[in-house]
Image (cartoon, rainbow over all chains, first blue to last red; front, side):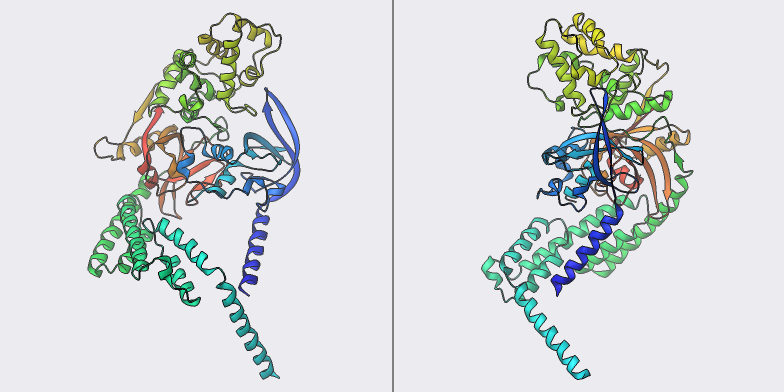
Length: 132
Length: 431
């Protein structure tokens, strides 16, 4: 009975999370060698476009969220730039500054790209892995 | 019929209870040990009573003898009381700090709850409570007055927050924003950083196996040095001429290293194509121009000559001077710092702030040092009764990971004065 109740709560939570994000096909661009490089991609984003996840990361079931470790902010805050990029590298990802498009409007953000092609913006990743 | 239905429900719920009890006792010893591990890790830092009670409940329900874990009878109370003491200490520390700026009812309630659990006498609790309650309320009234009018200096020239990437050049980004706001044109942060690290070009020749961290970071007064060096170099370089953020798969520092290595390895340049690292950092420089500069420079002057070429024409910074204010060296008092912040915001000038970035993630963090950003606004937040300053960070637009107590707007964070006052090293501004 209690297991059933837990599953129900989890399902409701996931639905609520999913409702916060909009998913679509679109473009991601970044500057490489001084030129703009564009790729097509499937991704999900929040209303103010400060969260970006590859579609397969929507439920956090992708390479980006597989690591079991948790990090204290002090471990990531050295003099080396922004902590979420450091986290991204710790997790084996590649941090990139990018723009993603929603209805032809560009939104500047970053992403932590993993070898399997999944990605999440580095701040969302930090929120997940941060031990508060 | 109704009776049969009642009987069926009773039977079902009894069976369910028995089933769930046997199921919940499966592997109970390792579960108890897991929870105890968490308790042992945290009981000196915070209240662990819920977990301790859970262990007790599991042990009772599943008839586990706790002696087999080597635990004595008084251990549970020791864990709980130590946790309560930690909570009282924390609450007291926060009350000391926050009552100077705002109503501290939540902290007082926490103090009262844990002090009562520790059986501190009620007279002492009530005396402490009323002292900080009245102090907090008086501060809140004064702060609301001081926090007027609301100011928000974000504008189109500043644009969206920048992203300093993986390099510890926050001072350059904060400095570039001061210049950008002053001259009304977007200034290159990389150029400000290069000017601060002018000795960098010489240092690089002496080092083997160096990393970004050797050149990252600046003294608390780094912004003044960086802006002063930029001024001496002929002025500010525009972001359109020397990009600070768009370095594709590389970081700016790895690109600079690559350029230095090219020069180190080749006495002369035969190729007619511009090396990729040069294209990344200096997109406006053509292959022919790069060849000319490379041929006519030494390793010590190559980078400087490239940036000079890319930055033409520089914007002169006549009369630009940076001023600093720090907390009192002896008492740590921050009144002068906030007076200056308010004065500058009132005259519609932005500032840079050197502070402890850990506070962005945890408003109760204690450590000191480390980061620089800009202050571009002020408001009184009626929801939490706090005067807040708008910290314009240089870590991109993300807002997911900052302390949820703060309001974050695409990388701009409203941080209460009560928090900033704990971690500020200095503020600087262009006079």
